[in-house]
Length: 77
Image 1: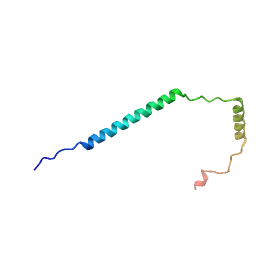
Image 2: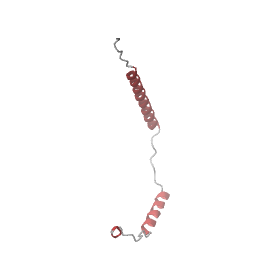
Image 3: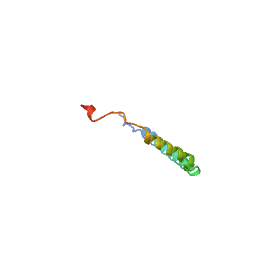
Image 4: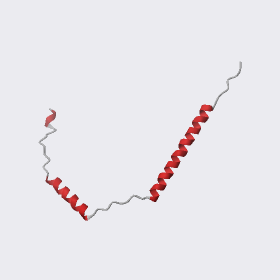
């Protein structure tokens, strides 16, 4: 009988696929990193109109009666 030959084809294929995935991940990571360096995020600024609108909403929220008459502790009985 002939001795069985071991085939490493599946192992080689797996290693090649892993290398391709790692290289693709590094490529995408570097391209995203370069994009962020070229286009930094703009900081948000609050204008006087925005501040006035926010204050108005805050006052409206404080004046609204939100009591709905629900009592959670006694409703479990």
